[in-house]
Length: 177
Image 1 (cartoon, rainbow, N blue to C red):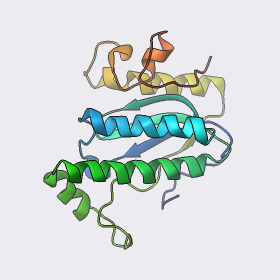
Image 2 (cartoon, rainbow, N blue to C red):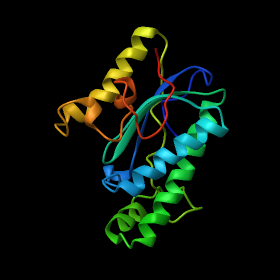
Image 3 (cartoon, rainbow, N blue to C red):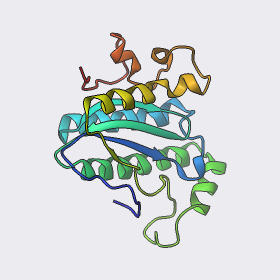
């Protein structure tokens, strides 16, 4: 799982996770790149037993709360799949300025690839109580509001806030009651 001081301490318990694009590049301003993330979470829910309790995708990073029997593997599969697909998208659409930065930002020890999309690690934090779960979900959903992007959390398209407000979201989540 990368070289991070943040580790998944109990792979079967819920964790609050953050994934950040290298150099905080604004890759998720394109609906197609966000859809790659959403499709990956949906696949992991359906095929690898991921329980996705909440999420938000912002322009250069994302937060989510998830649980799985092997959360470390789910996160690894998520980051690997999304990185490859997003880089393929950027290449297909000749987004050279982002590709150049992702090429430059690649860590020296990453000899098996031309680009590095995600920062190493996932900043995992064990969610050990009901109160902490509520706190993390509120933080996730409030993020676009705090940034001034929307007035109400459920107005942010790329968030599970709609699901918690009783509206249809872009993907299904495992609502925490």
